[in-house]
Amino acid sequence: MPRFFVTGQPENGLLTLRGEDAHHAGRVLRLRPGEAVTLCDGAGTDYDCTVASVEKETVTCRVQDSHPAVTEPRQQLTLCMALPKGDKMDFIVQKAVELGVHKIIPYVSQNCVSRPDKTEKKVERWRKIALEAAKQCGRGRLPEVCAVVMAEQAMARAAQSETALFFYENERETGLHDVLQHGVGSTVSLVIGPEGGFAPEEAALAAQLGLKSVSLGTRILRCETAPIAALAAVLYAGGNM
Ligand code: SAH
Image 1: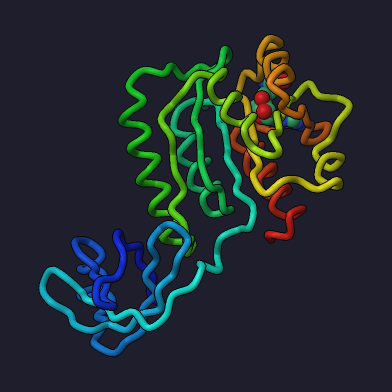
Image 2 (image 1 turned 45 degrees about the vertical axis):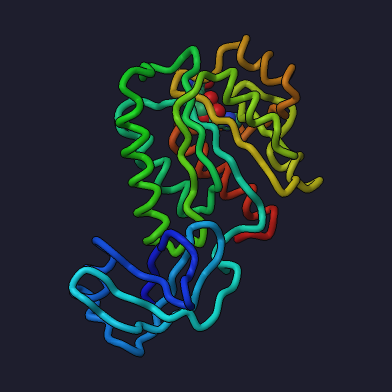
C-alpha cells in the first residue's frame, strides 16, 4: 500500500498531498480515485484513505479510518552519537531510523576528529536522510535529528530518560545483557562515543550524571557498528523486534 507523510490534520475528512509527494502519487504511481493509500502525520497516527481526486499539483485523499501507527516501537529510544569522521553519520542516521529510533542527538566529545563547525548544513542533510529512511521503512513517526551539542549537554539530556546507557569500551564489569535482563524503561537513551573512544573525564561525568556504564562485549566495535548493535539489542529485549 502506498504510504506518505502529511502535515496537518484532516479537514472535512480530507488530507492533501502536495509537491513531490503529489507528483509521486499522481504521476509515478498513477493512483486513481478510489484507490487505497495510507497517510501518516509523522507523529504516530496513520490514516487509511482512498484517493478522492488527482489534480496537477495535488492529490486529495478521503480519510476512512485512523489508528496509531503499527510500525512504531513501544520504547522511545534516543541515540546520543558522537560525531564520527567523514560521512559515517549518514549511515548511522539511516540505520537508526530503520531500527526505530525516536530521536538522534549528535554531539562533540574530546576525541572527536570531526570539528563542530558548519554543522547546520550537516544537520539539514541528516534530517533529509532521516525523512527518506522513515518513508522507505514505513515509520509512523518522523524521528527528530537535533542540532549538534557538546558531550556534557548530550549526557545531561540522556540522563532524563528512565534508562540512560553509556556504552563504554573500557567497561569490564557490566554487560548490556546484565542491564537488559532486569528490564528497561519505556524511554531509553544510548550514548555512543567517537572513533577515539571516551576520555576518562567523560566516563566520570557520565557516572556522576547517573548514566549506566555498559559493555557491548569483549570486542571493540567501530563507532558506526556500536549504535546499530546497541539499538537492536535494546529493541529485542523490549519485545520490539
Ligand atoms: N578507540 C577506542 C574504541 C572506540 S569505539 C578503543 O580502541 O578503545 C567507538 C564507540 O563505540 C565507543 O566509544 C563506545 O561508545 C562504543 N563501543 C565500541 N565497542 C564497544 C564495546 N565493546 N563496549 C561498549 N561500547 C563500545
